[in-house]
Amino acid sequence: MSRPGRDYTPRKFNKSTPNVDTSMPPPATGRKEIPKPQKKPEQSGEPRRQQRPQQRRTNRGGQRQQRPQQRRKDASPLYDATWARVVEFDAGDGVITGFTEEALIPCRIGIESSEAILPSSRIYIGSGEGSPKGTILGGAIFDRMSNSAKLDFPLIIQLFVEEFGMHFVQSFFNKAGNLSLKQHAFELLDGIGSKKAQQMVELRGSSGFASLAELNEKCSIDAAELLARRFFSEIEDRTLQPRLIDHLFPVNA
Image (cartoon, rainbow, N blue to C red):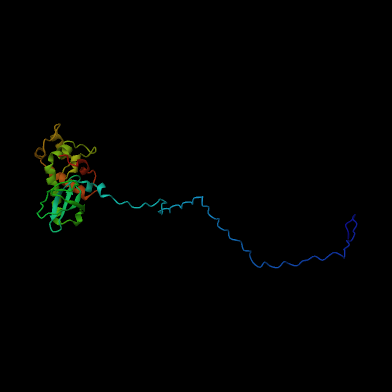
């Protein structure tokens, strides 16, 4: 039925309407080939771009790794030294075990000598002219030294301190002061406590000690032996602080 108030008129279909083509196009046979771009000919007047150098490899932190630089021998205090003291001489190999006078650095020295070289002898290791002349072979390691060299090492240092006794009296014993509120510099020496250090300060007075012999007599000590022990401890242990070697060397004879 039609809605009320609206006439219903049936739609007439035209029989002559043409048929609609509902057939599907044939499937694609493949993807069309895309022509590759051709390289442009290089112009003779245009300079070629320089290739960038390859970047250095980076470590985990993102920083560039630098090639390790070879250490120059002439930049080392060992190779800057001029004189050395003999601790032991191996005549068979022609090698001296000793230490430099400038900083007490243990070293090995090559030398050509048909005569015996006694301990505590001076050997010239500089670049100029000197006699007897030796050549630095490198540093000396205590673990590789002979037992006699290990025992004689502090004794040779003591002889060196006694030879230049006035230098160490003026540079250390006459100038040493407090390191802190509770420690005096004299307490760095083996066997010197706070009471002994205060006694040495009082005996020194304002004028100081005139010689190493006077120091030993007034204070009842062997100053050269005590200094030699301290120096030897600093050579064995590079982390020992404060370092008297750094303050008292080189020797001003």
